[in-house]
Length: 209
Image 1 (spheres, one colour):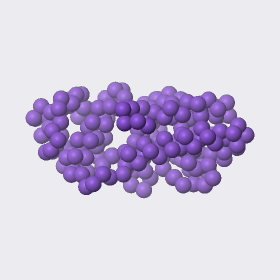
Image 2 (cartoon, one colour; image 1 turned 90 degrees about the vertical axis):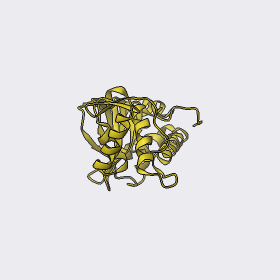
Image 3 (cartoon, helix red, strand yellow; image 1 turned 180 degrees about the vertical axis):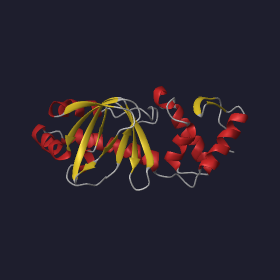
Image 4 (tube, one colour; image 1 turned 90 degrees about the horizontal axis):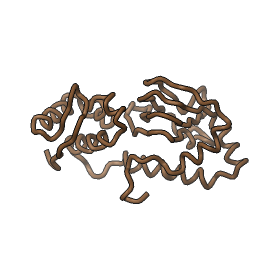
């Protein structure tokens, strides 16, 4: 992925993979706020996000790792074993196809899709690495600044459904009081516009706090 690409753009391989897998699952509608697990009763599960937006969480500490918009595929890293026991939640009403990871493994073998599969997996790992791995030791303000910029790039419907404070804390686990204090200072200084806790606009964020 080149540096000029939108960091919130989805995988260019997801739709092609979905096209191959869709005939083998039954899409279903989900409401906002539903949780789907990558492991169910000891079995790996794959999910095809056909419509909507979801947020991915790490089970160990409930930290939000990223958000994703359709089209997207989840759970394909668990084809041979359960390597990731995380989960995601729908943040908008979604249409999702569900298929056991074991069946996905069979389809990939039958259709010789390992090239496409590996490209999708590498894209996902690259995205997670860039989003999650720390770069130095950022201050609380630098973490908040980064998440405000990411929030502004989120889908408008999602951005209007979550407070800036909650979004930041779910992705950084900073204290509520610390986040609220910095947001209040940024709002007072005219750097951001917030209404009822929702981020409306970023005017200009200072590099340092």
